[in-house]
Length: 369
Image (cartoon, rainbow, N blue to C red; front, side, top):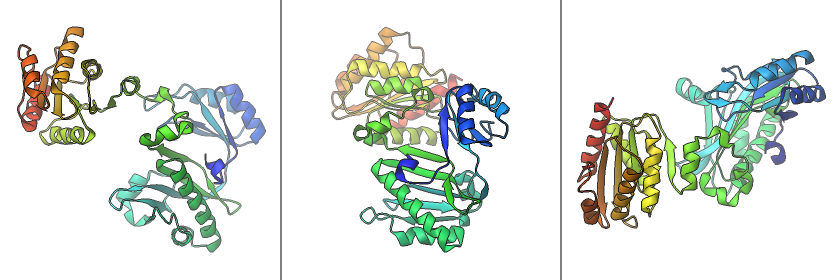
């Protein structure tokens, strides 16, 4: 993507076997750097990035990295890249500043390390400027940042060209984040993008089949893939209170309230604006597949979503599986009275308010530890 956008990158190619890695290394010339291709940070610290100076070492090193487990992801591909003589390293990224409601260009002379750590320990090393969406990244904005980083007009001009191409890529591909870390100054006095991270806006995938094609399903939670196919928005978290909610805003508020009352949400799950009983039953099955879940909270504000459909889905889920996990339900809005009647003969815990429901779910999760 960077090469297509005109951003300077090293010569490199992807290999899926140790033999292919050796062939690429021979074509590039030694030394080379072999990098694990997994969608997580911290590959270097995990031993997933290694410099190789001898051709006879390429296959053993590639074989060692292939098959590694880095933060739960298996390495199935490596990137073989030419080795670059680095004089200095920088960070440059573009993301959305939600407070300013504009994209923001962020840069730092402390490249090659986690930018979050730089922001925490040395915030003065981070330079930023917001970008007017109508004007785009104006050259003088990028030059000002470039001069702060490089202190040389020639390098500032190079930085400006790279930053503008990065912004064009950010906009054209509907990204939520594009970053180069590190952007390096090589021995020839040129800037080069040595590593990158790109996040796409999921809501824009319908107009970017080329983005969708880049998905690596092996790096995603299988249960999240299943949920998406069923029209559910599900993200697994590390807590023990499972959540079934309709609407992203209510889901976030529910998770906040769980934290406020001393609990930890096990997931984000939005069943959407309308839910059939089958969809609700699937939502509960997905939550119950997480062994960490000790209690389930169903928090529904019925508008388009009918509470009786939710109740029927709970009954269906109970018929399909022996649910022993405590289930707390708060249903208000459309057909809430019918829902209460449907669930009246079940051992489900009924709550009248959101706070009451959350407190009950957190308490049940603690009891079940």
